[in-house]
Length: 310
Image (cartoon, rainbow, N blue to C red; front, side):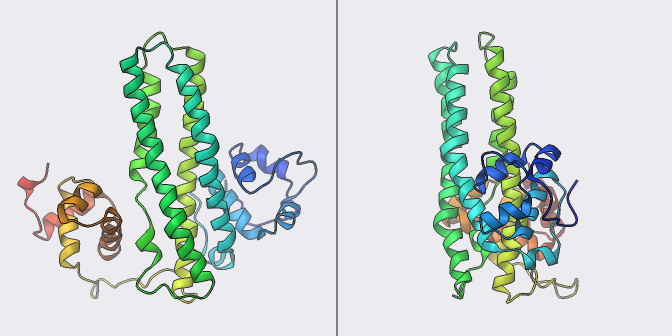
């Protein structure tokens, strides 16, 4: 359960007792070693971190249903969130994925070469995709946020222009878990299999929380900067809802037909990030998030016919 009121006198050891996943959060914030009688206030003071932002991050780790209030977002410090996300990228690439890779090598030792090759390709492709995702954020998202903090206008850009699609990443780690659980040959060591499953499940949960921090903390906090302190974006009334552009209608048709973002990008000779931005705009304008809901919307508005939907 999320902590609704911040208490700087809460001991770190108490936070860890409440949820073991918070250890990863503490490590990435530079907190390590003997906690002793250290409180949240002590740690935040020692690491020059805003206590309210610390508790907001903590709540995301212990409660999957936690949503920060407008007050929390306005009072939080974006610099601390950016630094946390940067440290998380380093942790995933330099520690978590390398440790998992070594464990999978041991687990796959009894497999024949063809089995090893196909499994390793799947894992390496997943690792490469994560690498590209984090690299994009480090090269584009983080500099954009820092530029806003320095008082520079974003021009035509907004945080929505840079946000990536996490669905593929989330789906592939779920597939990796299923492969380890159900598809390895009998000769694979059972103990190593359980260790690998534990590590994959921990990484899956951690990445899910990482995504939540980006979408539920960083994005709305940056929108506050973009909108000069006005929370969120103006909501359209039903009567004055903004119409879809012709390009957005084309993207919507592709989504309704089951095309992936990359396939839509290739079809219209645009970047995958442009597709993602259009999809976010479509969701904002229609108020519909799911592919199934968008498909129904496209059918009701005559953009596609029922025979074109698989």
